[in-house]
Amino acid sequence: MNQSPLASVRGVAFDLDGLMFNTEDVFEIAGNILVERRGKTMPEDVRSQMMGRRAHEAFAILKEALGLSDSIDTMIDETKEIFYSHLDAHLQPMPGLFELLDLLEARNIPKCVATSSYRDYLLDLLKRFDLSDRFVALLSAEDVVEGKPNPEIYQKAAKSLQIAPQEMLVLEDSQAGTEAGAAAGAMVMSIPNRHTDMQDFSVATIVGKSLNDLVEML
Image 1 (cartoon, rainbow, N blue to C red):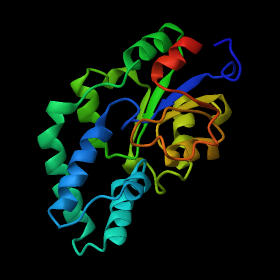
Image 2: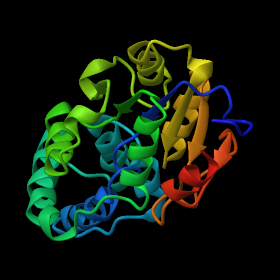
Image 3: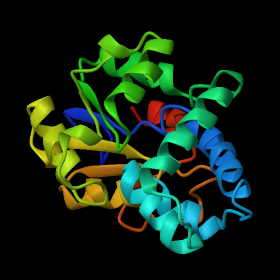
Image 4: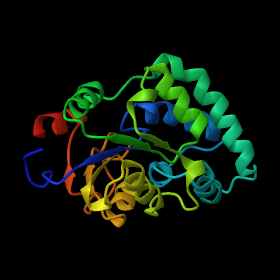
């Protein structure tokens, strides 16, 4: 990498949902169905607050905001069922993903995934696109005590890449994830999508439109 501010990058940490895959589109469908079954509508600000967080933390926000009586575990299980019933019809990689992976591998730059989602879900998505073996490490919700925006997962990501946080580039689509990467001391490239473009990315090092922007910078 020969362009500032990326010249010192020695490893890359990828978020998963909304960054590698368009799963936020499917979560939107599932979330709408979940709350409609309870006679509610999903407020955009609540959906925005939920993004980038671990499931229990996200659904705690939903439960409080809408005054829902169901347990968090009940809502998580129901949402998972709805989500998977729609996944095959909608799932796609985000633009530039494969081009970026190929380029990083050509440059011998190690990469990992650091997601707030659970490991079985992470492995399922990667398997669908034969990506499991293309990362040095796969970090998920089970690997941390505190979820994003706490920096713990990106601190562990840097250790998994055997580099200092300051030498790592974090790729994120949410405010919570961006804040986690910045708090860890990493450089952060935020790539908002239609679900997150209203969020605050002021702590990001770079804000792009797609992963193709990073391909062009390298």
